[in-house]
Length: 119
Length: 109
Image (cartoon, rainbow over all chains, first blue to last red; front, top):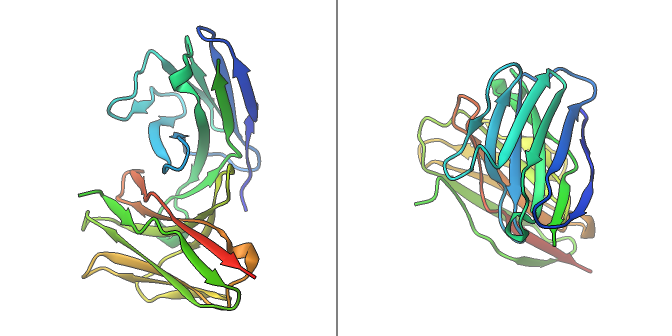
């Protein structure tokens, strides 16, 4: 299957610092990339949808200025958590989509995730 | 009502058992349906797509009932390695993908 990488896999940082997470589709060009956040024992929550060369679409309740998304190419999207605080500690997962995918709809392939801990 | 609802479980079953999960969705315009598997502290991995006609992959069978707006996953002959959280995923079109909260499965020896 398609491979999506994510870097770094784990980050521990001090409150107030900014953290950048990279998401790459390694063997395909992704029409769209997604960023999710998952708190312990909860489901994935979509944060934003990102298309190459255009502004990301953020879900309700997600602060655009705090979670900066840059989608510079069809294989790379970055999420920057600016001025991170302890409540931002979470598991951040990206996914890349191929359209059309399985069953005629977009299939998503997930990166391995980045565990962010803000002290 | 949540857009995608699943019984959180946990389901505790012995090896060799058959277990079934259901998932309901609220948007009748939903177009594609998937089951993902997520292991603890890992990313979700696509298990199988769900077609109206039903589809089977080894010990796993998925079915879609559009009229009742639910999908199901059946696991036969459970293995210890099947222990995971199973996520019901619904694509409502326009890249709007909704994840269920997941159903936790524990298979015991």
